[in-house]
Image (cartoon, rainbow, N blue to C red; front, side, top):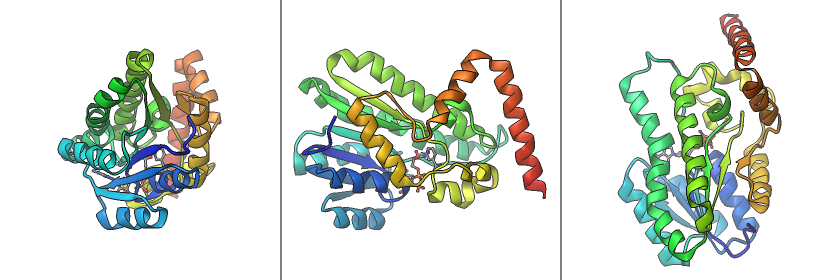
Length: 261
Ligand SMILES: NC(=O)c1ccc[n+]([C@@H]2O[C@H](COP(=O)([O-])OP(=O)(O)OC[C@H]3O[C@@H](n4cnc5c(N)ncnc54)[C@H](O)[C@@H]3O)[C@@H](O)[C@H]2O)c1
């Protein structure tokens, strides 16, 4: 899919990867870009910069997502591309609080379900539409230091696969964006930085992710990998799960050692 003249909604569009997508889609000639984010002021600033619209949206609330879709449709017409991109990270394992597990489920998974409910009926009626689901390499490979992130991102990948399988023949295209480290506040902020510092090595900029997305959408590829090496890691995991787990344990102990120095 080419972005020219398309109508696009991006959740989590006020910062990081989402903001880079909004800017890039506008630069590619999208007809309307709607920045949907819980941070209303930051969303408005991005919308102003690119000549789009901002809709204050908390993706945990189904009515907010429905409103973002309605506003986008009123302003520009039917939505061609919906980017379900907002996401959060929390550190920890099983011991993470129920509140953290609940919050990350609501934002990293349930929001994608609400988004699909909000946009799919009109897309199915038109027989066309594109969903870009931001998951993570952690949804294919599991994140060192954060079980809630790994678990929810695996679920996000599964939902994307399911949508692609189920609605592909009805004209719905789906891409699943699975980056490794991206230099945004998620990676550099407090929530994940203590456990995800190792991802800074080999990290890419949000603009490089946007570049990979435009290429992936153009090729209508399911898996969009701004870090191509993730495909090789994923292959190695499938080839020999136990060997892969041994490698991940070695990585975990290197991360532990680096943290204790
Ligand atoms: N940064 C990375 O290393 C990395 C790697 C892989 C995947 N990802 C994924 O990319 C996506 C974007 O992350 P980012 O790195 O740009 O982070 P970011 O923190 O820079 O941006 C996330 C955006 O989501 C918004 N958001 C958070 N909760 C929301 C809510 N309830 N409703 C609406 N908006 C909400 C925030 O306000 C923010 O604008 C996430 O899904 C993240 O899991 C990030």
